[in-house]
Every structure is written in C-alpha cells, then in structure tokens.
Length: 363
Image (tube, rainbow, N blue to C red):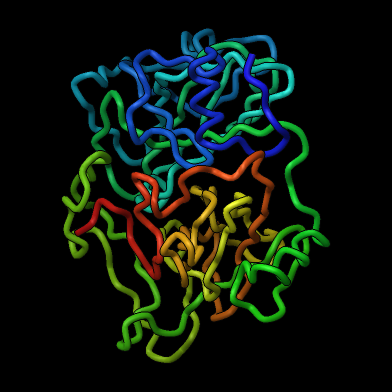
C-alpha cells in the first residue's frame, strides 16, 4: 500500500498509486497524462447514446442502468462524432481501487469546458457525479453532452481529469486571508473571502478595441478534441465588443467565454478549484472546468498575470452582467507535498499567463 500524507496528492503520488493498482488502466499512462495535481482520464473503446442523463444509485452499476436506457453503441476505436443536444456515456480506460482513506473528485479539463462540452464522471452505485467515495473499487464512465459544437472524439481522448485527496485539505476563510497576506493569491487589494476568494468578471477592454469576450456561433463545423490549433476562430466564435458600456446581456441558451478581472495565483504548495457563486445573485452560471494546478499564475512558473477564464451560460431569462460583478469563488486546498513540476513547466500546460483565451483547439 502507498503511504500517503493528508492533502491533495501530487503527480509523484498519483504515479505511485498507478504502480500499486489503486488506479488501474487498460493501457500504460501516457507521458503527459499526469499533471502536477491531477490525472487525465482517457476515453475507452465504447460509448453509448442514451435517452437521458442518470445516476445509478446505491444498488446498481452503470452497466445495469445502460441496459434499459442506452439507444445504441458507438465504436470509439474508430473515432465518432458526438452531436450537440445528445447525451452519451463512454467507458473510461482508468478504473479505481481506492483505499478507505482516499477520495477522488473529477472535473472537465479546461479545454473541454471552453468548447462547451458538458462532461462528468460516473462510478458504479454512485449517488453524485464527479465524486468517488473512499473504498470504491470498479470502473469509471464519462457522461458527455456537447452543447455548442459537435465534437469528434476517439479512444484515448481526454475530456476529464481526476484529483485525489486524503484527509481535510480545504483552507478556512481565516487561512485564506493569511495565505493572501503572504502570497497575494488574487490581485484584489482587499478581496472578498467568504467560502473562498471572490472572482469577478472583466467587461472592460482586452485588445484596445473594446473586446470583452466571445459568444459561440450556432450551426458550426466539428471540433476535433485531439487537434490543437486546427479550427479557425471566426468559424466558431463571435467576438463581443462592449463599446464602453461595461455590461453584457446574457442570452438564454447562449455560451460565452469571458475572463476574470483579477489575476489568479496558486502557490506551489496549494491547489485550487473554481466554484460557482451563489445562484441567488443571478440566473447564470460559471461552470465546467474548475481545477487550478499548483503553479497556475505563479511568477516562479512563468504565469504572472494569469486570469481565470470563465465559461458562462444564462439559464432561463436574459441577464445583465456588469463589469466587476462577482461570478465565482476560488477554493484553495493544501497539497500533500509540493509537486516536482509545477503548472506551466508541465507538459500540456496550455493556459499559463493567459488573458482572454479560447481553448487550444483554435488557431
């Protein structure tokens, strides 16, 4: 058994968990699959178009549930187009055999969220998405639902990532205040800290010509999730210019890429997660990808000035979003140990020192 310290497990510990069989895989880990504080999860050979999203519940496996809800099987070994507005369940190559002290949590990868692909991980007998309880032994699956663009995915594509935590790792508000005093984790002089560090939206000007964000176009071509820089921005995105108004009306059902007003820093001994702000403040959500690895935005890893990119949808009614409005909070957690390689120096660190940045798929 691997000896683990309390906190979020680093890349070295994740590698050891793989060698010990705690994380099992149908094929060896790819060289860049382990990030400083997380593990990319790879699609397996089969996916299923299903009638609706589901959780298996405490007495059933995902496979049991698929027998009654799957419409047809899809061969991912050859690659497949996943259409917008449809729900798919895909096998993952990774499976778990967790000890009684280790909890696993999943999130979409940053690149997945930025192309508006809603994805979450499901385990057998699960009563919650993206959460795998200590002691779990069994396979993992990904629910995938493209919202804005149809995607081309295949066996080995990575849409989600997983983090492993032992013990209590989350910082209290008092600890966050002390960390900010030492490290200035956001550029706000006096940030709002209540259940996390407040992050607000920037609707001023990113390019000197009034650019405040991007809105996804409708009826576009495919995004190949494994190809970097293969798509033209103009074919998929409409640039939004504020013309000095410093506000944006969110249309229901539309998807927006915006950026935080604050630059964000995650010191090497910590990891962070973006959580939605209280929904009572407005009918919109900043959602999808939430993990920030150690070193994100950190000057020592080449990331000084990194903004948080916000993936935004309005719910049922149009909503006026104003410059400086709080839209999310950063929750910080302690690492069990400092990673040997920080985000920015690690392979696949596509968003270090970012401003308003679309996903890696766009040239």
